[in-house]
Image 1 (tube, one colour):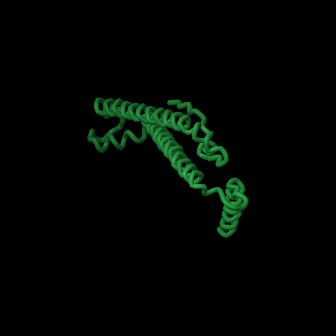
Image 2: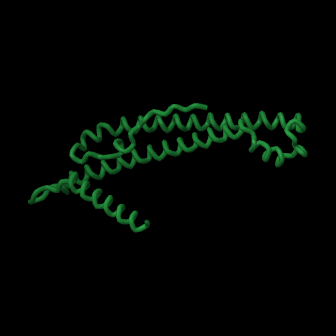
Length: 166
């Protein structure tokens, strides 16, 4: 089963431009719709993969029960059939498709949660602006520069930790 996925730029979509909160708010519902639709599509693909897996298992199980000699089964019990299903390529392929669809559905769910988290962050930034958090008697803080500085420090720290592990 071939699944074509819409390319979404998660990193860009969850980032916030603090200097353009109004634009970020205008984009938020569009992002939520896009990621929500992707999550629904992933869930549909998961359900379809599960149905296909169940179909393949049922078909093989029926064949095994009707002609156990063809499959070299010592006896026809649920445990023997369940174990025998694991070695057939159709079943392995269907299980693999199901596992991939399950992974994609989970990633899509997490993406929706991240976009929802962005909404909360935007709400709190707007509240801070409304409370004049960013205003002061001196030069206003430049969040972009502070963010870049923090990210640079984090990368340096991560690099040091990586060298320590070696």
